[in-house]
Image 1 (cartoon, rainbow, N blue to C red):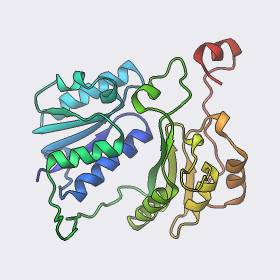
Image 2: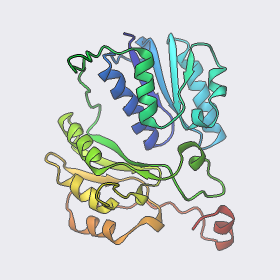
Image 3: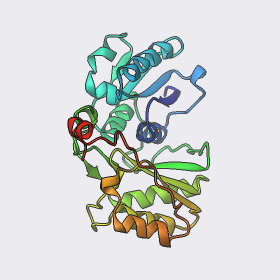
Length: 260
């Protein structure tokens, strides 16, 4: 089983996606080692700008100096996988959602799973810091005129609250008491099972034993709902802070950008 190292470019969602691949490889029995010693490098890429795409390709070329094989995924790969496959024969692009890609990576790299006895050869997944980024949502339906994200990540979709809470409990066990809720259009969250909105989900996360703080990544102003404000006002473990992006204060510019 090859040793591996994982790295990412771009936003916190890219980091969360990279950690999904990391966990699948650990579950498959691979050993995580420092980047310089890893036979396999896994890189989650970014394409939010042309510079980010160029940096993603550069990261692959840099990894090839020490790694025997490089797996690439993420937004830049979803946009144009061929530009990565053409770098070298031992570069493998994976196109698709983070979960599907992570499964494909584990399958391709080989797994030491005893299917007959349903036993996973797990290695401990140690937390490197006290703050954990939990992806609760992916994709976007806004389709702003300048943005490539809906093309490479698809339409908005929310993760079931049960899966989010399971991950939160696992992160607490790993020594991460602070959770950061993140997503591409995170304020658009709606639990497909119970209909929870983002604020209601954050309250449930805050009440998981061992959680000390809950934070929220960037949220669009059109998604700041009463349930989110109530959560920030009433749940002491939720940090009362909103990071709201504003591209322009000019109506004509916003209209040209396709912004609401």
